[in-house]
Length: 212
Image (cartoon, rainbow, N blue to C red; front, side, top):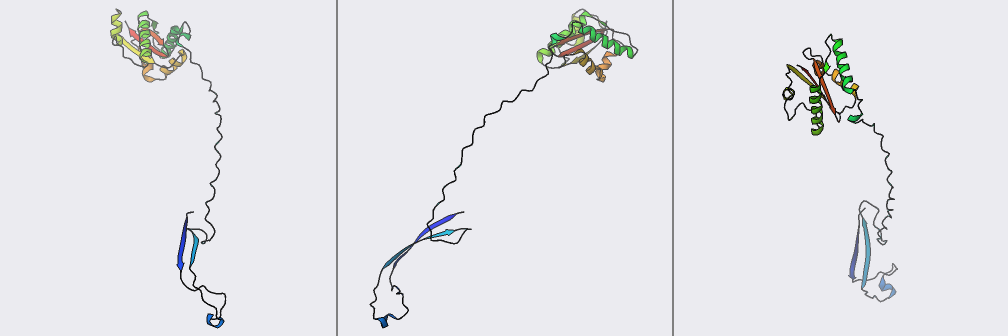
């Protein structure tokens, strides 16, 4: 509500002050005295409010606002995280376990079993370590392609293939992921391959297959 206040000075009024009597002044033989009167009146005009009043315009006291009481933050209870095993927590025979599962898949498809190869194990472990170093799942390697790396080790290969994975710390989990992927399963079921090598580093995996 907006209140506008104004003081109206009516100024010096020249004229006859009315006497509380209705009879003519001449009949009562009362002398007429001219008086100068100064009238000051305060008028309050209210917009969209009550009618004007002669009461003094007094601004209401501002409301008292209590400052907010600071709340002590409640510490959030950390959610328990399922620990991820490190690469060193794999069983000592984890490469044998991979070989057994691959050969079981090949047996169901009527294919001959593979055998672990030291050169392929070394190349696969090197590829896993490179992925961990660059923190990315990749078939690339500064030493070249899989075939080039095998040739550098003196292996006369005839066919090669490679599977990779990341963020896995368990033999069964990585094998399930490869088996459920048609492209990776196709590599493991390649009839041309006779050798296998597997590497793992910090959750990054490499499986290399070849025929020498």
